Amino acid sequence: MQPWIAQELASSDLGDQRLDRRYALLLDRLSQRPNLSIPAACQGWDETLAAYRFFDNDRVTPDKRLLPHRDAALKRIAAQSLVLLAQDTTELELTRRQEQVGGPLRDQQHFGLHVHPLWAMTPEGVPLGVLAAEIWARDAADFHQRSQRQHQPIEQKESYRWLVGYRQACALAEQVPGTQVVCLSDSEGDIYECFVEAASAGGRKADWVVRACQDRRLADPRGTKLCSAVAA
Image (cartoon, rainbow, N blue to C red):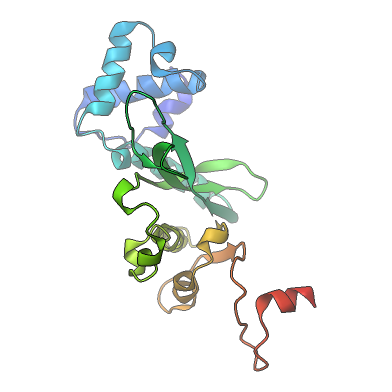
């Protein structure tokens, strides 16, 4: 087994040592050949079946699997003077003819899951780890109900994930006071609630960089807007 795996899973506690050992073995197999499926990466049917049972075990939740990696990532982050936290959403397309897996993606013909991770890296792009990852499937019954969602509180919207990600970045900034934490968001994260959170009092805040999407009014007595100020 690769030496780094024991270090990465040092704090793993799935409630059963056999599960912890299986986790380490799976990480060893899949990390060596990440492009392969589980059956192709495992050595034989018995090992493949054990892998499927591992992921189907109620004790093995995504949060518990991520926890030891997160602990290891925190140590790597604390050793840096500046860390970038990038958040973005990825579609996992699982469209199949014989069954519907997950929820609708960009339309009602493509199905799968959405994953919104919080990636930590150095300014040079060296990965330090994944601190959080939200996984969800859209409800087909609510698809194309944008006009109704506009009147919902932020906590009930998909865009809430961007606010959660920034709050997690602020929590990290509290944990590593010797490290400057900068949260990076795509244009979907250009929402009012994130600006309010960044300006609110209390606790150490992460710095925040967002790709602008809204032509917002600046704190300017002339009422200048963002796009005009940038173009000037």
